[in-house]
Image (tube, rainbow, N blue to C red; front, side, top):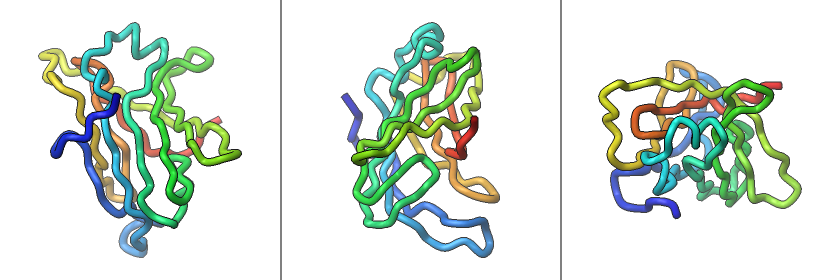
Amino acid sequence: MFDTLPGVGDEQRLMVGSWPRGTYGPLAKIQPHRAAAYLTEADRDTGAVIARIINLDTLSYPKFNMHPRDTVYWWVGKRHGEMVSIFFSSYPGARPWVSNLEIDYHPSRPYYQPIARWIWSDRDELAWGTCDGGRCCRSAGIAIR
């Protein structure tokens, strides 16, 4: 269901706080769902899990809804007519975390296999992944209403 091959996912310590005063947080993996590159726009808009995040640490990370030693599923789709990310934690009692979703369109449809990565921004980390063959999705993991 999720691709664990080297190079298609990512693993790193996530930043807590903002650069340059931030500190290292939990060690986390992000792995793409094997179907993520093969979804259609309609599949994605209806809603689909595109990746999972595995917290390998005992530290929690509020962004992306990560609790200690947790597995979080990154769902993208429409909610109240707006495209959003929802991070579903498997931690007992955790509620879904609704976050932003930015979608980039690539007319040449470059994604022939699913990919998921942590992306550095000047202020923090972003989750990035293929969300259909011609688009990639990213989220800052910050809660929205």
